[in-house]
Image 1 (cartoon, rainbow, N blue to C red):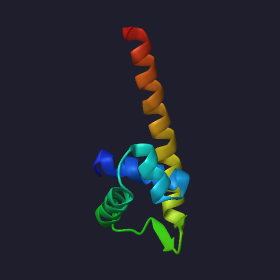
Image 2: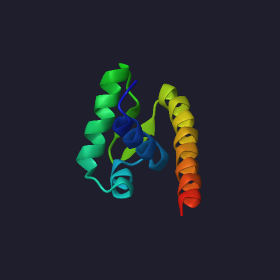
Image 3: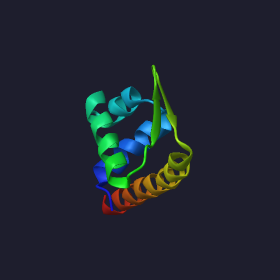
Length: 88
């Protein structure tokens, strides 16, 4: 299982199709997002993005992977929100 930090960076970058916007959302540098995504690519042994000038494009394999992560992160966020509402 890849580290959650790498998955989170990839999920945000895939959703925004931008390392810059993902970095802004996660309050880290653009280089940090790039580093996490590259580490995830190394872990999986697959390219996740076609890196073009000023544009990121998901590979076909990454598109399905991202869809699964979108749902998983949304579910985690909903669970945290539910827990917070029950604690207070």
